Image (cartoon, rainbow, N blue to C red; front, side):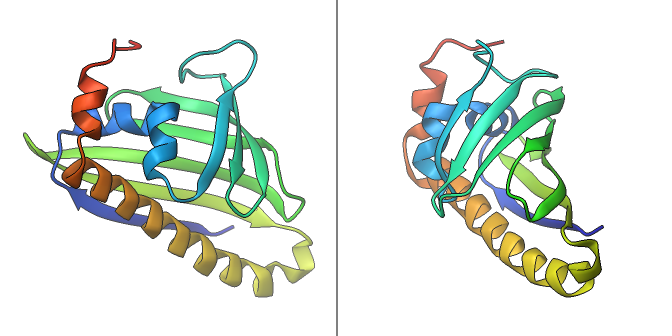
Length: 161
C-alpha cells in the first residue's frame, strides 16, 4: 500500500496555516483541487469523528472522517466513501514551525486500489497523479499565504477553537 508525500516551506506562522487549511470557505480560494466541500451531520469545524464531503474539480467525490485533529500541528482523515478505484484512502497535513513566520507543511496520502491484482500497475500511476496534485495544492497554499491578504482575513474572523 503506497504512502506518498510532498512538502513545502511557507513564509507564514504555522498556527495560521493550520487554521487556513481547516477554514473551508477560504480553502476553496487557494486549493486548486477542490470544487466544494461541506461538513456533514451538523458539524461546523474539524474534530475527531466529524465527516466531510468533498468534490474535486475533476468531478470525483469522497466522504472523509477526521481521525486526528491536533491544532496547530496535524490533521488526518480517512475515506469512508469514495471512488470505486480506492479500496482504502487516508491523508494527513502536518505543520512544523521552523521559525516565527516560517513553516514546513507536509501533505501525505496512504492508499490502496482495486482490483488488488492490478495494484502493481495501477498504484504507481495513481501515486504520480496524486503527488502532482499534492504539490499543486501546497503551491496554492504557499502562494495564497505569501502573496494575498488571506491570512489577514483569517485573523479578522472569530476563532473556531
